[in-house]
Image 1 (cartoon, rainbow, N blue to C red):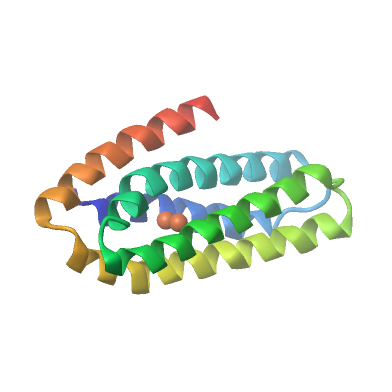
Image 2: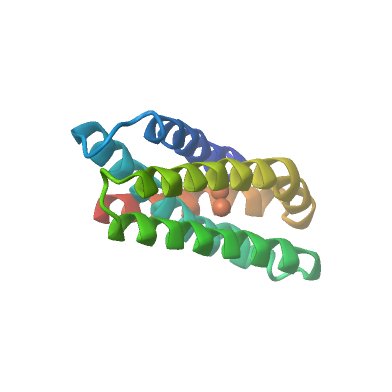
Amino acid sequence: MNIFEALRESHDRQRGYADALIQTHGDSKERVDVYKHLKAELQAHAIAEERFFYIPLMQSDNGIDLSRHAISEHHEMDEMMEELDETEMSSPSWMATAKKLSEKVHHHLKEEEQKFFQSAGKLLDDKQKESLAGEYQKEYEEQLAEA
Ligand SMILES: [Fe+2]
Ligand SMILES: [Fe+2]
């Protein structure tokens, strides 16, 4: 497995949870569960992806801007989750923020897969693509276990 395949596995889960979240209603067990899964997935993925994908890419001049951009979007998603944590789950503004988060997740994953992965493919060699996959996966699993 290479780093791109490893990252995509989580991306597919993120899309599933983001889509499921905006189908939930009120302060329901389903909403609590789906949100908990989405938050854990986004946070574990972002930490492992920054550590074993974007930080290595920043070693190349051509990897700096895309890494900064992606990491700033991770922060934006964190802020939206903080807002959700501080809002009453049954209120309409909770769903308004959840929809913004879902749109942000889809935008971010599309940009990574369609733009950044192509650039990264040229900046990393085959050995790095394979070793980063293992390191990413280990970190991701540890983060998820702690969530
Ligand atoms: Fe990602
Ligand atoms: Fe990301």
